[in-house]
Length: 286
Ligand SMILES: NC(=O)c1ccc[n+]([C@@H]2O[C@H](COP(=O)([O-])OP(=O)(O)OC[C@H]3O[C@@H](n4cnc5c(N)ncnc54)[C@H](OP(=O)(O)O)[C@@H]3O)[C@@H](O)[C@H]2O)c1
Image 1: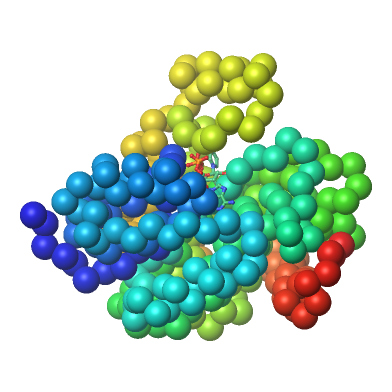
Image 2: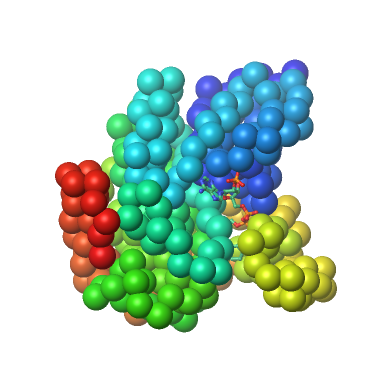
């Protein structure tokens, strides 16, 4: 049996796809791993797959599209783990139609972007206890498609599933920029675009799109192992720089318009105002 390393890794969206593969790899190396996901059955399967390493695995079932659930998870982690060495952010799900969470937010914005914001900032006290803390956000950095509609962040008008994914993806690019600039944390922030990978839950898509994506994935997508190899490298040796942006093996230049610090500050301010309004009122928001 492998000796425990004493390191703790938190993986949001760790029950499936790339997050699951990262979680299992870290368990095999002796880390303690906290996996966040919404599906209890997937959590149980992960425990079974982990075998002897399952004693170092904690699965926390949570719907990360809800602010209150992210806050519950952060409090739980703080109660059980003095230190967090790495946070790997993978949770995401497509939504063909616009859905609103019980807190009045558009689902993709809330799950793909806001959860990452909350976990990154919320775990700062635990990062401070680690030697070389690192956050790795697996999303789409380097892509320039899509934009942030500051006048309608919740996409109340003309919702489109791809537009929602792209907006949240660009918001995640700006989250990294803002965190590195403003968070006053020793945690290094890494944004990583894995490229088209043989993972991803397509069950919510229509049958034609689902089949097309599966066929394309068989032909052109990378294996999960190949896609996560750089992530494992970032966990082993966190970069020195506060912010790293990597599209597969290529460094993404910080001059890219999608990494504009001014827009990053603007989004961070919008996000804080939004969180204040949800926490304060519990009313639907725009
Ligand atoms: N696959 C690709 O080709 C590709 C390409 C570029 C970027 N990416 C990005 O890479 C990241 C990981 O992708 P992947 O392909 O590994 O995704 P995946 O296989 O679909 O896994 C997504 C994870 O998110 C979790 N999740 C979904 N809804 C949740 C919710 N409401 N609350 C908590 N957890 C939730 C799922 O767990 P439960 O089912 O347990 O909730 C699952 O563990 C995503 O951000 C994706 O956008 C992927």
